[in-house]
Image 1: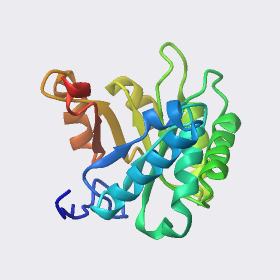
Image 2: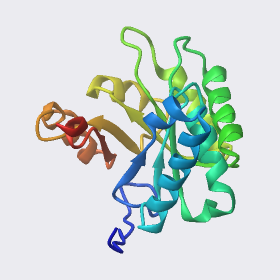
Image 3: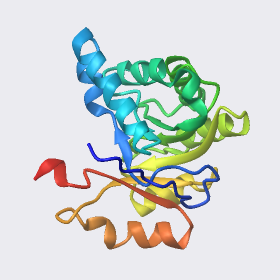
Length: 205
């Protein structure tokens, strides 16, 4: 592979620099239990870091935490080189439970602070502010650096912004899936919310 280095950038109101290209780890949760796969995935993390990809994205739901555990084992003494993002969502609208999800992620990742923590999915028809309350408490306690949301509508964002700031929104976006252009992306720009995308190549289409 050519020696390509990706320079870091600053996004939105997030103070820490990160690479504009992130390494997603959904598949890490599916394969992390197999020793051969773990070795290959660890090599993938190292290759990404060697080429300037410092933004590692995971979630509690990826293999029931296995993705976080594998990344946590890799991070080790490299913590200052890596921008860590994770996500969680809960069915019970309980701020204490959301706070515990952050603490569980910290334990699996073997770190004291996660740079960006997302509410993974809203719960339609429910008051989702308790999830934000749990994350804002974690941010005030220094357990997370910034708060994100994922797959939220403008109405969802309006609801949780009553509790605390949104620093980033992770959404599906590519040449085929452009529905976010209508309302969500303009809203994010208006409120200085960083736009982070997934499925950027439409899952390889």
